[in-house]
Image (cartoon, rainbow, N blue to C red; front, side, top):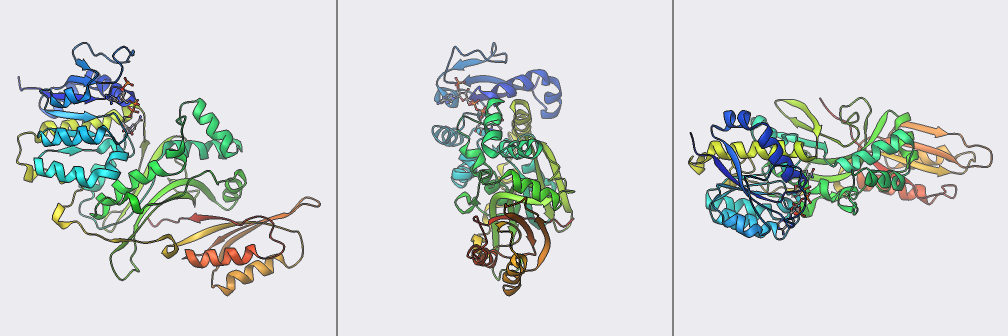
Length: 440
Ligand SMILES: NC(=O)c1ccc[n+]([C@@H]2O[C@H](COP(=O)([O-])OP(=O)(O)OC[C@H]3O[C@@H](n4cnc5c(N)ncnc54)[C@H](OP(=O)(O)O)[C@@H]3O)[C@@H](O)[C@H]2O)c1
C-alpha cells in the first residue's frame, strides 16, 4: 500500500472536528482521489478533557501545538484561528519543509505576503481554500478554473452572519439590534460580533480574493470597510419597493478609467437588483460573482461556514498536498495563481474617487416645493435620477423620499447630500447607500 499522508491537526474545534468526521466517513473516496490514504496522526487543542464530536482514538493528542509541528507529519493543518500563536506555528511548519493547510483568513489577510514567501523559500505547498467562503471552492475557481481570463470584478456575499442578519431584518421587519440578538441566540453570530457586522471578516476575505483575481499582493490595510449596523428596516422596505435587496457586499474591481493600474477594494451594505442571484442569496449562505473578459459573469453559491462545509475545502487542499508531494515545487500552482515575479502593484483607489449609483433617503417636512429643491440640487451637480419614491405622510408627520441616482463620483454624491442636508425642511441626516448593477 502507498504510504499514507500523515496530517498534524492544530485545533480540534468546529472545523477540526468536521475534518476528522469527513476524513473518516469518506475515507475510501478520498483515498481514491489522493492516490494514498489521508490520516490524521497527531492533533492538538487546549483542553484535553473537552468532549469532541469525532473519533480521536487513533490520533496522538496533545495540548502542545508546537509538539505537533515538530512531530513526524507530512502536512500541518492550522485550525486554531487568530494571529498568534497561529502565525508562528505556520511559519515554523513551513521552515521545516512541511506543507501547511490553513483556514485562517485573518492570518492570511494580514500576514499572507510573509507566509507565501516562506512557503516558496521552503518549496512547500500552502493551501488556504477554506479561508474564503467556506465550502465554495472560490480560490481554485479564480486561480485555476478562470486562469485564461482578465478578471475585472469579484463581488460577493462572504460574511454569512451579516447576510443572516439582513435577511432576518427583511423577512420580519426587525431592527438591526433585534436581528443581531437573535442571530447570537441561534449561534449564527459570535458573542463579540464586531468582526462580522463591521465588515472586517469580509475585508480579510476580499483582500485574499483580490490578490488572486488581479495578481497583486494582499492589501487588507487598503480595504474600505463599512458595517451593516446603519441599515434601517425602512431602507430595506424602500429598497424592495424600488426593485432592490440590501446585501452585505464585498467588491474588488479594476478601474478601467484610471490612467495607471488601479483597483477598488470595499465592503459595505449595498442595494443589488432583486432579480440577481446575489439578491436571492439569503440566510447564512455565501455567494461570489466573478466577471472575466472571456467567460463573462459566473456566480457561485453555497455554505460559507460550518464544520463540514469548511472541512470540505480543507480536505481538498490535503488531497492537493498528497498529489503534489515529491513533485518539483516549480510545478506547484503558485499560491496566488500568478508567478510571484509577475505580481503587479496597482494603486488602491480612495473612496472619494469611486463611481457608483446611490440610494438616498430623506425625511422631509410636508411642504410644497420640496421635491423641486432636491431635484435641482442633483441637476446642478449633473446627477441624474434613475428612480424616485415619495411616501406620503400621515397627518402632521414628515414625508419620506427615496432616490436612486445614476452612476456618479462619490465625492459629487456627497456634495449633493450635504447641500440637501442644509435645506431647512430636511429633518434627519440623509441616508446614503451604494447601489450595484451587474453586467452579464
Ligand atoms: N467555523 C467556521 O465555520 C469557519 C469557517 C471558515 C474558516 N474558519 C476558520 O477556521 C479556523 C478555526 O475555526 P473554528 O471555528 O474551528 O474555531 P474553534 O471552534 O474556536 O476551534 C479552535 C480550536 O483551536 C484550539 N486552540 C486554540 N488555541 C490553541 C492553542 N494555543 N494551542 C492548541 N490549540 C488551540 C481550541 O482548543 P479547545 O477545543 O481545547 O478550546 C479549538 O480546538 C479559524 O481560523 C476560523 O477563522 C472557520
